[in-house]
Length: 253
Length: 116
Image 1 (cartoon, rainbow over the protein chains, first blue to last red):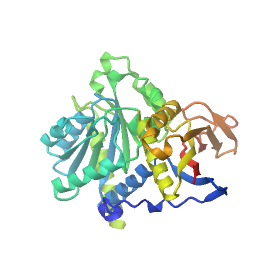
Image 2: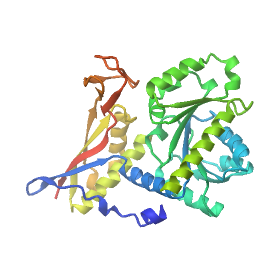
Image 3: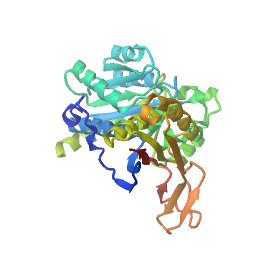
Image 4: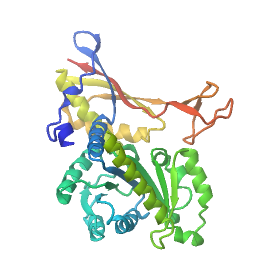
């Protein structure tokens, strides 16, 4: 970020990868060959470099509204706050509510309100992370970026995270992976939440796991309930392990 | 709905390109969108056309979308094949799932035609 991109002095002169292909007096063809998301990707890459430089594990959480992202974060903060410094960026269209909820559990949190946009983009994360650094007077060990509740659009925008997590809750139904393939194809971890409700819904965990893995064979899958605590310890251990890997990579780097 | 922000990003970058190339107008732009890209082409075209009016140099730009297929190559037997499904396939020739995705995730601005 700042030290990488110069913050606020974004230089677009690097877009020089074009050349004249045909030429007549009035019309010209300009070769562009750039990603449609190149500006987002550029900022995301600088976010990623910033996180790496400071040994921060960044996690992007994607799900529909109401599948339990914030509740899982509350439990995660409660459990890990004494051993890890935790920072949270809360993406929502409106309100400060989610940031207040995780702050109440002991994490530093900055609310990102998109004012209507259905997903977070890398520049807003960049800005939010600066506010978070200020609030923490330093860097977190682990940064959670809670995306806007939406299982579609957030999956197209890389934010610079190391791990992308997609969540679905038991009441949402077992057809979600097949209906929202991009979220599953681009994620590293898949969490099934509200497992305490399994007795009340026709939700076949094995079938859902199989379908998710047929979209993305590399998904690591957790089944948990933030309410009863079932499965939470596996999730916490996974986070502890990933934070250690990140720290080790920083020392080696 | 994210098609709108992506269309806006494309218009911004085309506008910058037009300034840089000292173009009067941008006549055409060609983009490649893969079937695995998560972009709904109709929404993207709709958003592009709705938003281009804001840019004097782009108000008549024609958007040409080339949809690219989902194409894999089998790392075991070398077979190349196309699928329609978003699910991870297996090789139709040898059944392997050790596959390389050759195309389908494209989200690329290829080129533009400008009037100078």
